[in-house]
Image (cartoon, rainbow, N blue to C red; front, side, top):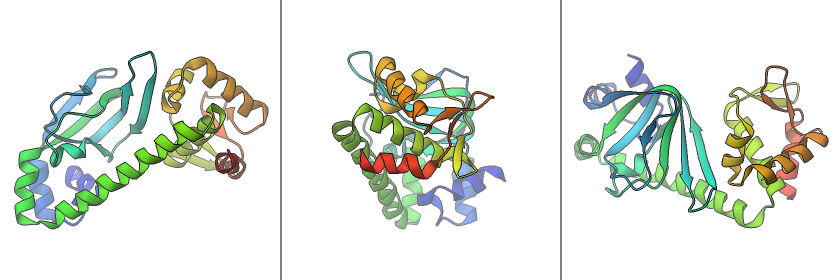
Length: 229
């Protein structure tokens, strides 16, 4: 079955037996979310985590002003909202389908019944939460100590490493992004983002392919800029 195989790729579920994974998949609820529709909003009650079965979902947060910070774009096999499995608090960010998506909701009560059978899951989940915390700390450090140019360079490298296709020493982003979407990933407004992106283009560090995808001609050189910023 495709569902249990996808669940096996989730780090803190990978130790489960195939029988347990089938049970998780049986208890979980599948939902379809149209492009542009919310999955959940920040500060909503959190009742479980989601796995992307198909489509694409973005995780983001809005500030009191006009700024939006996009934390991640997630595709098939990736998951989000896992803190709800143990914390029981409200959502710390919002989630929205970027395109028509199918999601799997694993509810907190079902996960806790699995914990009773295999307490190791708690340790595995803790490792996942710690990794998310490490990534959040890196984001905060970047916002505090990098200028916009450095943040744009790092955002392009991160997107390239996450979903880029290698080509002649560089990377081509497989997903298409508008400038506003990329500005949201950086956590800045459109105008300073556009200036920084133009600087990277003039330096030959970023370009746009004929079919409208962003590309990094020399990944090593752009990575060097990220380190030296």
